[in-house]
Image (cartoon, rainbow, N blue to C red; front, side, top):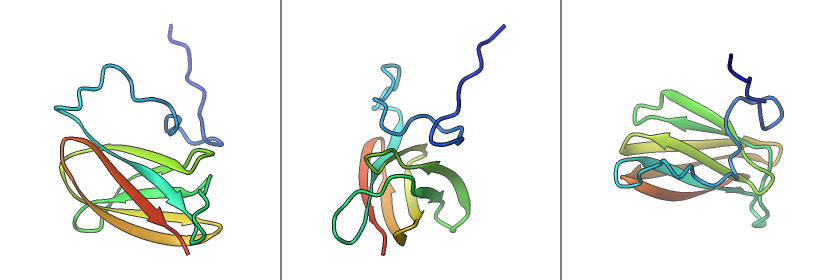
Length: 109
């Protein structure tokens, strides 16, 4: 029998976005897109929905930012768009991700 995992981020089933990467992650083989959502004044935006869109604009995944505005996706190498939706507004950022950690900031307005 397995123990159910409690959802995080107010009911979202995504893992805690502020948690450290698991030690089992091999960054020589994995592609991680990580970053923070910020308001125009530079303040972090907790509770924003961040969507990962592929190179054709198709929805791939969504997470909710941590209290520190952080988000993280495990993806394939390539060109991605991050779309943040929040009470402060919306914003997009593009990234060409390669193996390892790819840092991205998304500003909403």
